[in-house]
Image (cartoon, rainbow, N blue to C red; front, top):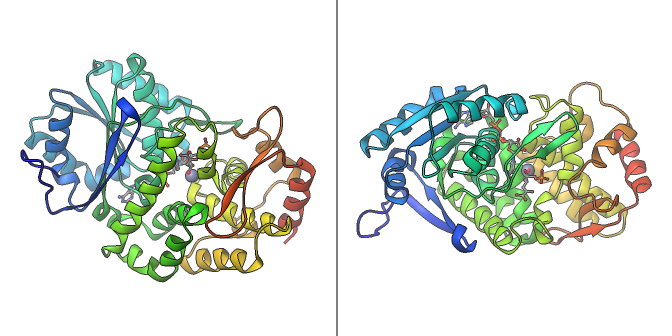
Length: 379
Ligand SMILES: NC(=O)c1ccc[n+]([C@@H]2O[C@H](COP(=O)([O-])OP(=O)(O)OC[C@H]3O[C@@H](n4cnc5c(N)ncnc54)[C@H](O)[C@@H]3O)[C@@H](O)[C@H]2O)c1
Ligand SMILES: O=C(O)C(=O)C[C@@H](O)[C@H](O)[C@H](O)COP(=O)(O)O
Ligand SMILES: [Zn+2]
């Protein structure tokens, strides 16, 4: 990171700014970033106490490194450890985290440090946005998904029985530290789930990036320098969109490519290990390409390329890839009707004219979507 002269240490490979006026912040990407996080935090938030929120798996693997770094920099801290998994993105865990923050007597000048995947980031981010009506937030994402997506942009929240992320606040972090090396301890399934969100940026508006991923995904997975490059490109893609449309009044909805179908699939599989968010996105993206193809919008060749790439990487691409029974199309439609992009009762979908050319389609007829889902469920 930076020393007193503002010189970057060798572990940093890229700094991506998120331009949001007085709420602007940096995403610092590199290696061994957790080891020097304490000094960076002390420099940016002098005197702040830190409440680390993490899950039990990340705590076992990496918490000592973070704590050593905070101690070395003289940063005072407490820790709150939650149960791993999507089930923790709940009102019950939120209440317990908020209570722990109050018990620790956190002040407005203090910070929550979300140290984990997207579950920890969304939950701890929400808690930091509502405790004392908002305290500082630092994101140290430890999954690929969290490094390229959930730690950036300020969407926080929890799931409810009625739908995914239906309760939350926009609350931007002060700093994001993405340590590419920490991803080495991820099981392949979880790494891959995050990869779907990486590829999403190429599919939305950067065909060259998708093409680069088709040739370089193995190096990204192996942890070669291509990994930092992919993280930086994805973060830059998200930062640009968030800077333009922080609260999803328009263009930010593009980041929801694959999510309208994906969130419904997560709901009907009970927000569980049966289907990880990134896996739901992978299937949802392929469905969005298929649906766009059927509407005469997207060339067959592009639809095939997307499915072939996700399959090669090891991601599920079809509804039939989900283990166990699924409900009918009408039940999936019921969840789709709760999507946050529904406006005046009309469905909004992110469709595509091809790789790198996604667009927001308003007023998609529900019966067309339901017929499409019936066909997909029958396959
Ligand atoms: N806020 C946003 O903009 C946004 C964007 C995308 C996704 N999300 C949300 O993110 C969540 C999914 O995040 P996720 O895929 O990171 O899941 P996750 O947070 O559940 O992490 C997946 C698993 O990996 C483990 N883990 C984390 N880091 C590890 C490491 N370095 N080594 C070994 N194990 C590690 C965790 O303990 C957990 O069991 C979903 O709830 C999704 O809705 C939010
Ligand atoms: O940051 C965004 O905007 C996104 O849509 C990113 C998505 O990958 C992410 O899953 C997000 O949490 C979905 O948001 P939601 O508003 O559809 O719940
Ligand atoms: Zn997502």
